[in-house]
Amino acid sequence: MSHRAEHESGTAARHAGLFSSTAPHRSGDGHALLAPVLVLNASYEPINVCAARRALVLVLKGVAMTEEEDGHFLHSARLAMRLPSVIRLLEYRRIPHQSRALSRKNILLRDRNTCQYCGSVLPSSELTLDHVIPRSRGGSSTWENLVACCHPCNRRKGNQLPGEAGMKLTREPRAFNLHTSRHIMRLMGRSDDKWRKYLFY
Image (cartoon, rainbow, N blue to C red; front, side, top):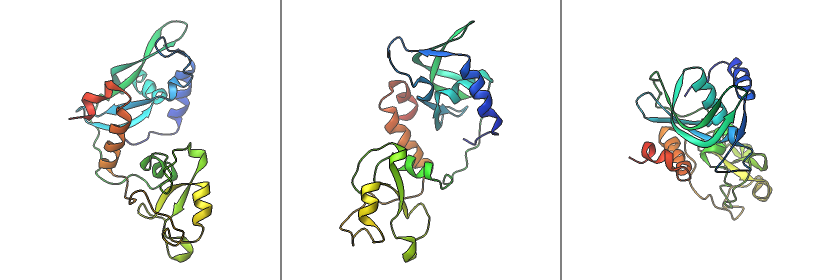
């Protein structure tokens, strides 16, 4: 789903700032507004995952409606709302069948924050991007030559090919396309039963 203008992030902050979150079924969770929400097209086709904060803004602006609710409540002085778990756009969006933009964020998302050499799952801040074929040896910055890599593996590999360093990729890197996105949605959906009927068909 394409991003709207930057001013919407300010709108998001204002809307979300009206509320404080509580979770009657999951107390102690201070990250309710960062929880993943499945985004469906108007046709019920899954097309994206966004943070609950963004999903709430889309619902408040009348761009989307809530299909499934989270266990969290958001409270303000005048109302209480449940955070969505699944939202659906009210107008159909044409989604181009092409790869997403090549970026650090999308490489880490494709690789699920997992070092592609040792398999460690780490926060984004503890991962770097590695050129499988080093740039100094003709490697380019492409989907097929960039992988998520932890700092120890990055230091070990240095300016070598994986085989030269005695290392092996856990899987072949590929472009992040719609099929890849849906696969990631399914993996994330395993922890949220409310997503299941929209993803597993």
